[in-house]
Amino acid sequence: NAGVTQTPKFRILKIGQSMTLQCTQDMNHNYMYWYRQDPGMGLKLIYYSVGAGITDKGEVPNGYNVSRSTTEDFPLRLELAAPSQTSVYFCASTGPDSNYGYTFGSGTRLTVV
Amino acid sequence: AQSVTQPDIHITVSEGASLELRCNYSYGATPYLFWYVQSPGQGLQLLLKYFSGDTLVQGIKGFEAEFKRSQSSFNLRKPSVHWSDAAEYFCAVGFTGGGNKLTFGTGTQLKVEL
Image (cartoon, rainbow over all chains, first blue to last red; front, side, top):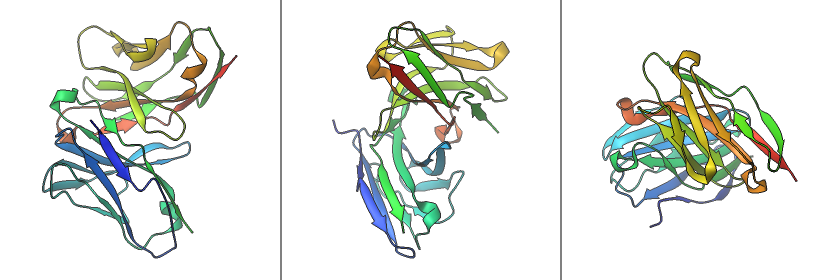
C-alpha cells in the first residue's frame, strides 16, 4: 500500500517558469490537501478537495491552481513561478476510515531562482 | 477562526528524561486535536488524535496527550525520551465538516542529548 505519492522530490525552477506537482493516493480517500511548509511557519493550506470535481481555496492560494478529475489524483500547478514560492510542498489525504487523521506524502522541495 | 500556538520553538532533553510539549488552541466549539511528528526530510506522521471521550489519549511510539478544556491545551508527553525521538512536532486543530481542514501550529523542534 503506497499511501500518498508525490513527485518530483526536488525541483529548481527559474522565475516565470511553470510546473505541476503531482500527488496520487491509493487509499480511496475523498479529502485531499496541499500544504506548503516554510521554516518557523508551520504548514499553510494552499488548496483542498472534498471529492472528484470539487476544489476550494485554502489560506494561501495565490499563484497556484489545482484540479481533481479523479479520486486518486490531486495535482498542484504553479504558474509564473516566483521566489516567494520557494518552499516544501506536502500533499495529504484523509477519509472516514482514517478518523480524519491525515496521511502525508514525503514532500516536494521547490526552489525558484 | 481556529488557531494553534506552540510556545516552544526548540526543546532539548536528555535521553531517558521525561518530555512535555505544549500546545494551546483557540476554537469556538469542541475541537478535534492532533499531534504529528516530522523526521528530517520526511512527511508528517500522525502520533495521536483526540475527538471526544477520555481526555487522556495514547498514541504510537509511547506518546500520550491530555486534553484540558479549561486551559485550551493539548500537551504531548512521553515518560522517557529515546534518541530516535529527535524530530519536529506539530500540533493541529480541526473539525469535521468544512473539508476537515487542519490548522497547524508552527512546530517544536526536539533535540535529544545522549
